[in-house]
Image (tube, rainbow, N blue to C red; front, side, top):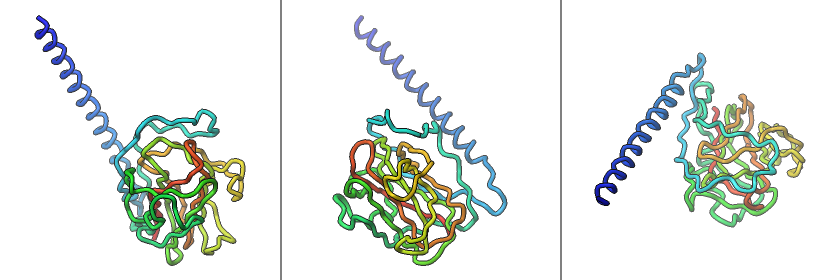
Length: 237
């Protein structure tokens, strides 16, 4: 009798699992088809993004007091269109920063193409305000910037500022993103949102700005005062 009852329970669990698998599969397939159906404007194409697999281990912690926190989209990010022929100009390029001797990893890893959330794929910089800087070797038209701080956990990084310049010292620069609401990084007060890190990274519309150097600031996160980078990408031509 007990064996018969156990068999029935197992059968119900199997059927439920199969139903969920088919339902979720259909939802994901529909979302993919909807995204693919978005037509690119003339002369434009979707960015050729190669995103890492999601790797969340837990839910966001200590974010209750984070102001101007962007709500999760709840679905895959729509395609971003840029002029045809753009590519990731940052791949393999020289990178420098305010902390040339990271606590974990080597700073050159930030443009090596590895976007996984695994140990050995991220760089850990010192606490408080730090920056990294990518040299594109010559002035380029930049249409989008994509960055991953750390997406193994759902974290919020503070004072995220992205600047573009033709001057390696950034005596004159243009900010394309700034969520430093109290000027902690001393780069001006920003109005952009805080956001939770995901495997999709943070995509910023650079609107074709011209420049050779791209600098990224951050000032710790909701879990610690330390700063992390997995990868940065700069799309242009």
